[in-house]
Length: 456
Image (tube, rainbow, N blue to C red; front, side):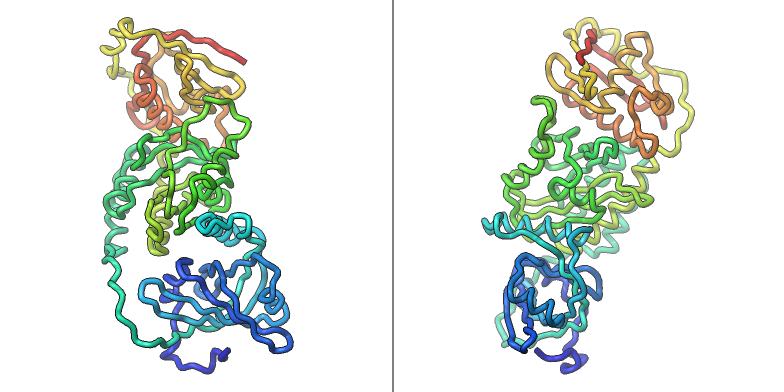
């Protein structure tokens, strides 16, 4: 192993040049030395980018490599750029092993994708993330070979970012903001499968408020914190990207586990791809709080690059700030309610809606079909009772002041809950209609006769 000082400045490379090598497409090779000077060479499943001066290597087995590192912390790692088959040698110094935290969780999630892809789920288990200081990066000369096809030309990232940021900044409602974000992902970034989930701190879950590119919208479907790449990204407040096939069985099992013990028929199916090849979950962080997750996926392996991750992290910051902004400022509502009086007049011609609320979790069933639960279910129950008493116009402020709804004291995401309710009604029960009439106010109408009942 050559010392970092043994090669010229012309042979040195930067971490930015190296990043395509860290996608896991081609295994890395690590060389270590025992205390007595005996060399050892082994393959690595992951070399993970931490920052410009550090990488993390996966610690899975207490083997010869591990023993050598603990005795002698210097090592070299050979990595390959899968796009042009250029080789690089990293000169490293072992610092510590992390067994928790964002770097460990990201590596753990990515390793699960690699393991399921290779059929080695029981063997590939991350015990720790070994943090190494990068002393130098050396370009390794290779024999001349036929050039590989050039990768597809990507849009210039700053120009793309400017266009997308402009779209998001013009949105004036949460609905418009989410649709603008999904439109940009589909048409600007060529990411047709995407969804936005909002965090519910009280329940420790995330619920889908918008999606694109799936047979069903999945609006209202839930994922527990820490389950799947989405739950891990939210819990650790860090993006999680997997570029290898994640089996539907393994990924969906995490979602099934997160729903264990819930009532059958009281869940909305998760809308994700059955066999994703690439996935990227980016937390929506505003003022230090995780307000949700932006999630994209593709059936194609190696589809989502570190450049895509950088772009989505940037966009996620603006999207998170916009979600927060939508409920910070509320203007007084007007008194003229003209929205749906004509429709309401014909309600008698629509079949009866039998609505039942289960008090234990505020789940709402309409004609024995599950509709919604939780805070959104409690809101709908209030609106139905007040509408029966003759009211149609409501304000966000009065909902926030109603302690019976169970809204959290901080970051209630009321706008997101109302949007979720609006979309679920539109999909599953259009005879119940919720329409925004201004900032901080909305109208609720029942276009059919309603019969209300409660159960424990």
